[in-house]
Length: 391
Image (cartoon, rainbow, N blue to C red; front, side, top):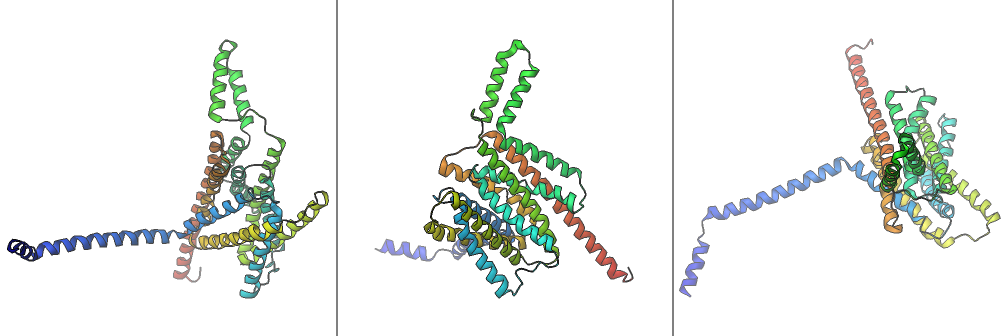
């Protein structure tokens, strides 16, 4: 007992400097961990617009993909979605913000184009979903950035630059690779056959076999329905490009986003109802009220959440960066198709999709640099005006 008491006393009489050193080391670790968390939070908060965009794209892709899993007509489900969105946008714009929801702000043509092109984009996008996979639709639709740049040259008299030509070529090549792999494979095989002599027929066969293995294209010819889906997705991309130009004109006249969203959802609801009624003349069937009141309402609420996230992202990040992040829709679609349908894409599809995304990135960066240059020039002009008021 005496020995134990002596040991306890020795432990209690431990030097103070050793205790303080341990405490200092613990405090340093704690402070380092807290500072690390603060840095991470600051970085995440600083670029919160990126995360809003990523989440918004993911929600949109999941909602769109879920339509392929529901045993009901997509446009019937969309009726419920557009009803929810029209009510919310209408109440917010008319009663909360006190806007005139049918006011054109002195731009009747731009307003009509925005309404019809927005509806055309959404409805042709959904119609394409009947015929081709979501990944193909998202890849084709993402070309809208390039088409918008081309249409701006035609309608807004923008200067056609060399970089526009490069992006257009990359987009066209990417579209051929992503949507017409059979055409690419046949052309490549014919080139090999034409350039080689008859003495090396076996080498040609081997080369063609290797190419088809790498590309992993099925031997069955694509159906007419697939190309119909490609056509609808292309229409969606073109209408999206026209809508962007019209929307740009409306933003210049300070047209509120909530009014534009209400006009789009209301017109899309009207078109969906007309299609639904006409379709029942040759295909009589009851409305899927159960799916409309559950899945349709849920998708409508999710789309509202997506609109909120996109609005927050636009306040924090540039439009060009958000457009680039929009290419994640292709990735989400590929992952969802693999998870639910075990559907994989060929290597040539990824090459084509990458070229399309690259063309959009090139244009977005070029546009971002042009905007920065314009802002710098405006600041210089403002400073010169302050120095010499007579300018």
